[in-house]
Image (cartoon, rainbow, N blue to C red; front, side, top):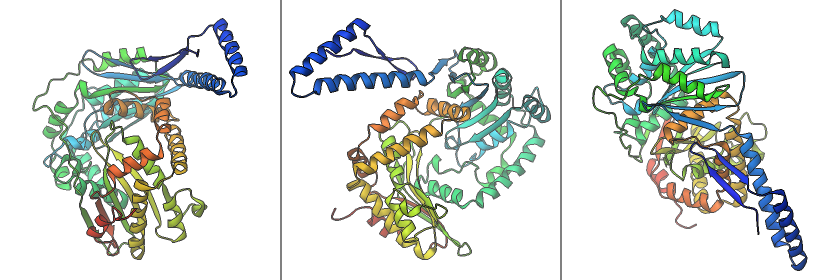
Length: 500
């Protein structure tokens, strides 16, 4: 006989474990187990009982310590999700399933332009009034645009959540889009584009998307081309707003000191009239094919080469995603500022430090709804580029064929720690809730995510890496003095070993 453990799968995302055992029953069980242990030459049953009791107690404690993520869907389709841990501050925001992936060559950049215009005044408050209201609250108001999402959020005191939601709802639904404001913001965005062009890592990743997903919407940059920014009008912005800011594509998220029932009422009052009626064609998420290819932008005036090598990864909801994250952690990251580089746990970091192969490198696993980019970005001297690429690809194939259990255990611990450490503020948790509801349709609680990571084995890593890396065509983007980067055919050929 063993304890009965009931798994309560609630409709949100929490997993609650309860022990259905009375004190008398537990005493009887323990007495029986002690008797059996005396009759048995080994203590297997005792060990199993002890392990089961310990695991149940640990799971119950974890469940108690994690606040539940509550989700409510309004009549118009808006989802309201919160995680309340009773703090004096809160982060609330509006996550919209719209970004540069929903644009085309003619209007690329309009989503980011619309994000800028939201803060330039509405029908009921000017830009100045908006800024004063936020300042009087002592709150922060911010926004960002990605390839698949547009986000508006505010960090404020818990008591000011109603005002923050009212302001966010106003700027999303009632942006004024005046001609003078559009012209002024046009100049701001053009200056922002110049700043991005000076950030070579951003430039490389834009080139990487353009070459990996050529001919598809994911090849679009978030800011858009200069010609589009100069020509976008209030008509373009209004059309985009009317066709993408729809109730069924909106998530209102809150974390910190946020009462779920109160946020639901606030959402209903301020965004209840947002509809799902489209004035034009209903936007669809077009599938984006991956193309193994390369792009090189040679600029010998730069001192270092900036290079990214990637294969097609998995989308957010793919079961291989977490395994690829573990594999990315196995590659790790390194730069010359690290004092203990030679003692780094990852092979590539040790080799990079010992042989001075690069100034820095970082692995990445960029996920989208149905695809992703998995690879490595590095900065190196032109004469060291070939050796760096060789060692990277050697590590790629080693992940597919001979990675060890000890390495994977270390990578899982590091990935788990990094994941949980990133969720230590209300803003980070709020972002996690909003993104996951748009990508997964639900929130993965931290203990579920941790359990999934811990269940990955070295065999899983080898199998998944073999599926995505071994003998696959990579995408390569390089900027700077790139004559030392090997020819694409050599890079492609080194994606497998003839003998392993």
